[in-house]
Amino acid sequence: MKHINFLLIKFVASFFIFWISLDLFFNTTFPVIIAFSLLVTIISYFIGDVVLLPRIGKRNAVVVDFFLTYIIVWVFGAFFLPSILQIAWGSIIAATLVAGSEVFVHSYIVRNIKPVPREKQQNLNQQFAYEFAEEEEPNPDKE
Image: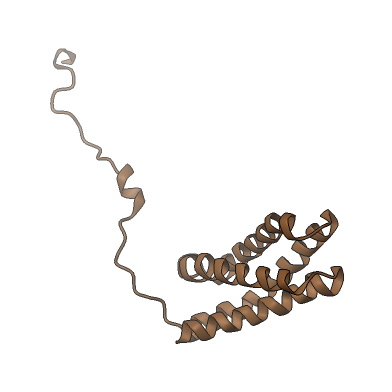
């Protein structure tokens, strides 16, 4: 239930951010704002909040959310928005506002939603581990 409330809060925040960044400045239609809000909420939640936030921390997750929002608005803006100027400035403004809101969102997640305990994962650096040893008889003619 906490995750549903969190997704609703995140969607409302995304809706207001896209309303400010796209509709207020560039006169975008309401369905496009809803589409961007849903898309950014869902992708940002699963990639930024569920997967990356427990692993890389709040500050780095905010940076990831900035670039994720920027790329989403830039790529999907090519389909929904008529002008390249609208796509460029809309993505910059939206990504900045989303990153600003994610600072508070990540603090809320860390305080109120406990991460699911994961099984201990194997360290990837162990596959490159090797052992140093002396050979017993590397060159018998040496002595």
